[in-house]
Image (cartoon, rainbow, N blue to C red; front, side):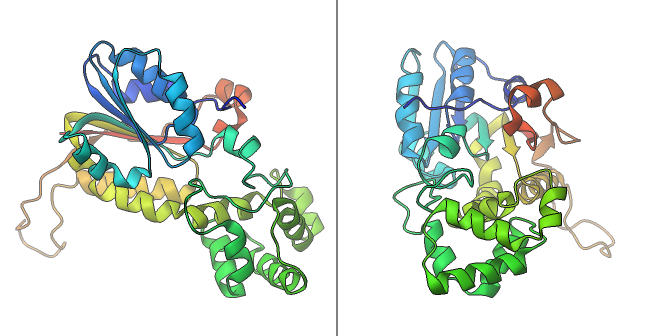
Length: 312
C-alpha cells in the first residue's frame, strides 16, 4: 500500500534549515519522506542525508522514495533520541541541519492498522515502533483509574478525564478493551452529550492523542533530545522543529530560551560568575504557523507550530 503523507509547512522548513549543496542534514522523523526528498533536492551534489524513523514502514518507503538521488543517504530504523549514537556510528562529529517533525503521519492514521484513529476498528496498538513492548491496550487494561486520568489530563488536556477513566475501568471489568472502536465508543459515552455537540473535534481526539504520547514516551524523549541537540550541530548549523501539541511546543520553546541565555546566576548575585555564553540564536522569535491555504489543502497541518534556531 502506498505511504500516504503530506509534508507540513515544507517551504518554511526548507527556509529555516537553509539547505546547501554538499552539507550534512538529518531528518529525524522521515514519515512519508516528503521533507527528506525536498532536502535531497537542495543538497546535491555531494550532500549527506541521514534519515531516522521508529516506524519500519517509513524506512521501507524512504528506501524507495530517496533511491533516485545520487547522494550519501543513511537510513536508520530507530528513535531520534539516539541520534548521537547514530552519528558516532557514521563517524560524523556534527551536522549542518536537523529536522524534527513530531506529527503523526496520514499513513499511520489510515493504513497502519495499529489503532491510531478513533474512526477505525483496529487493534489498540498505537506503537510507532512495532518492536516496542508496550501497546495501548496494555495501558488501558492495566493502569489504575487515577493513572489513566492523569495521562488524559496532562497529555491530552482532556476536561472529562475523570469520567472517561472511570468508564474505562468499569468496562474492562466486564471485558478487556482491545480495539480502537470500542475505546472511542467508551469515551463518547463518558462525555456529556451537550459537551460533544459543542466541541469542534471528535470527543475521543484528546484521549487517543494522550494514549499515543504515553505509549511512545514522546514527551520524555523530546525533552532528552532537546537537552543535547545543540552539541550535534556545526557552527551556523540549524535545528527546525514542527510540533503539534502545546506540551511539545513548550519543551522546544523553553530549551531554545535556555540555550540563548548568557547568564544563569541567581538574580541576587552582584555579578556573573557562571561565564555561560550564548549557544544559539533563535530564528523564530514568534512561533511560525501554517497558512490558511495550506490548512485548506492539508487539515492535519492546522495545529502545527514551527520553531528554529541557529548555533552560534
